[in-house]
Structures are given as structure tokens and as C-alpha cells.
Length: 356
Image (cartoon, rainbow, N blue to C red; front, side):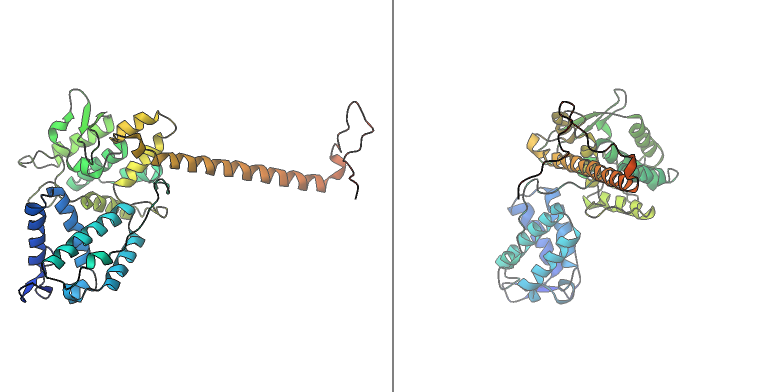
């Protein structure tokens, strides 16, 4: 399944050795049969587990050589290049897998406790969104003549227009689009609400072009978007769309600010940030599929940050105007109006003289 190299082994409780691929398959069966985890949860954990198992020193030395220091070094390096959500999934996947390996005897000590914890304050950061100009350039750069281009164009157009999650587009089915009523529905995920939106002309045309000209007609799947490689099938992992977006961003050599994701969530941030302060907050929560308004409060920090930046620009402009006025008055001292005299008491001094 994952990392099926014969050299990667762990010592079992019976003293024998097992391939790493066998350990992972056993862990997947344990999650499905014993813990009754959802299929999507197991796939997501396997995605992050694969990133860990293919990294050094695991890929060269195997599970038996793992140490707390190497685990912590991996997590700290991972946190420098990934966001909070990805880091949270990595920590969860590692802890579950290492605890499983310890109880099954594949490692001699419980290394799950060595995975470091990170504490983040709620609403402590401003969501970083891809800017509208980059979105426009990205959509304009995709080739609508190729099947892959038609698919990518429809995916990115959906993300930019509705701000939904990548998993909601992966789960989008053919019967979720009401062509006659010009409506489109996105299924509820993460405990949220179903999202029902108007089908815009741009989105409708891009979807129609993909379904009519690029999507295989004989595909036995209800999902709208399928992989381009045969056999064509629905996308399994959340990282698939992020890879598509990152590839198209590299093609146009997009320079995104630090902290802006190159995945599907940056479009969600852009959508919410674009509406904050322009439409009622409850409407934004409904369009994002949030059941509780507290889930949408994060975007108030983005509005506050924009307001702060605007006020800083205004203050800077006032300072510059004041400095220029003083310089001009110093260069032409005779052209000034001089100190203003009081209308009722013209003999008042221009300033008060205080006693020493």
C-alpha cells in the first residue's frame, strides 16, 4: 500500500520482522474494523503517514531506529512549511500510528508521547487569501482546449466563485447540479450545513464544457470530477486539488505573499474576506456552510487588518502632507499668514509664556 520497500521492517511481538507495508496494512485494517473509522478519515491519515514514512530517517533505517529527537525534528521542520490544519493532521496521524506500533510490539517504547504539541490561540491569526488579480490571471491562463484544462478550469472556477471546501467539490455529483433551476448544491462536511447556491453563468458554462467535452461518457461514477489517467475515477485525497492548483500557479509563476496557501483553502479565505463588511455576517456563515457564527469570526480579523492598514496609510499621508507644508513654509517665510490674532483681544500673545 504505502512504502512497500522490503528493507523497511519492524520487530513484531513474536520476535519476527514485518515489512513496513504489512504494518501499514495492518494499521488500516485496525482503524476500519476495530476503531470503525470512516473511509475518508483512514485515507487522510494514510496520506500524512506516507509523508512521514517516506521522509528521513524512516525511509533508510526503518521503524526500529526511530527516536524522540528525530520525531520532534521532523515535526518542527514540517511546521515551517505547512499550515495549522496540515500540522494538526500530521500530529494526529503520527500519534495514532506510533501508539498502534507500540502495542503491537513493532517499536520498543511508546513514541506517540514524543510528538510535540503546538498551542494556537483562537482568532490569533489573520487568514491569508489569494488575491483577486492572481485568481483572474490563473483562470485566464488555463487552456480550455485540453481535457485536463477544462477540468482544472471548472474546479478553480467553483472554488473562486463559491468558496467551498475542496472535499465538497470532490464529492460534487452530477445530480447536485439543477440545470433547469440554475442551482447547485454542495454536501455538508465537517458537521456543517448543506450549501445551496445560484448557478452562475461562468460556473455553469465551465461545468458544461467539462462534462460534455472532457469527462468520459462511459464512466460508472456519479461524481462530477474524475482523474485524467485511465482508469478514470473520482479523486480520493484532499491533496489532489491542492496539487492541481499548485501546478497551475507554478505555470504562471505566481508570487504569493508569505503565508498564503497554494491549495484550495486560499480560495475559501478569499471568498469570505471579499464579502466581510459588505453583506450580513449571517449570510457569509450560510454561504460557507457554518452552523455556528463562531466558526466565521476568524474573518473579522481580516476585516480589522484591512481597516488598520487603511488607517495607517491615511495617517502616513497626513504626516507627509504636514511635513511638506512645514518645508514649504520654511522655504517661503514671508508668504505665511503668521500667528492668528484673537478677534476680541488683538493684543494677546501668539503663545503663552510660562514662569520658569
